Length: 281
Image 1 (tube, rainbow, N blue to C red):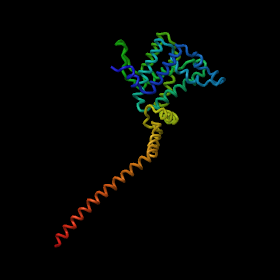
Image 2 (image 1 turned 45 degrees about the horizontal axis):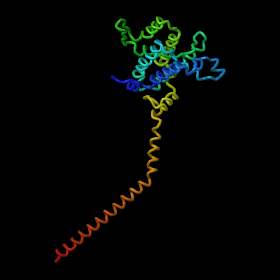
Image 3 (image 1 turned 60 degrees about the vertical axis):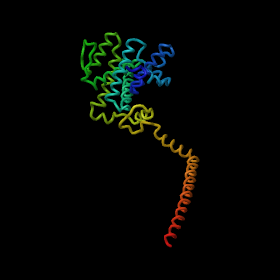
Image 4 (image 1 turned 90 degrees about the vertical axis):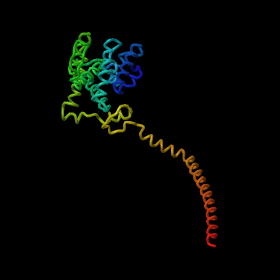
């Protein structure tokens, strides 16, 4: 049985990062370290007061500490991790692009007043559920031995759970819409896949991050790869004096060995010379 730290270290980077940020955002709210109004989505503050961080921070609040919060965090750590380890395995940049494109789609929907919500994190989480159901349509899901259904129906099951718990259904429906748009443009539509592929700047961001792996990345996954070569060059230049001293010592030792060999050879030649003269008599 693994420890909590071992479990944390075993999680893939993207789902782990999003889950940790969501947890810290809620924890800071419960400790009254900030006001929710400072991170919520209000387009009037974005365009009039240039508070552009609201376009990002609203996705990190998925509710206060409650059963609903734990349920949504579990979705990230289970279905989000399964997506990153399954269909998006060795495709970290594509998985990041899935989150970014879903967030952009939700921001566009929120322009319309009847679709607006101050926090779109719940919709982004439900988008994970929808895409998981499309990627694992035949997976068997057993609910406490009472109900068993295929993975394709998981979003609708989650929708029913939220309805029973009394949670608003609009975030769930927006998540389904964002997930379907992403899945349609990247998987179902044969022509849109070429135009909706992961941008180069996302590949560059993931490469600079240095986490995960992308098989078709046009950039290096390790941003310190080039520095290592220059580092070796600096080590060679920095140790030039010691290298030269070592070479001089080696040359001196070689010269001494040569002199000893020459002396030994001369003694042998002298002996052979005497042997030759004796043989010549």
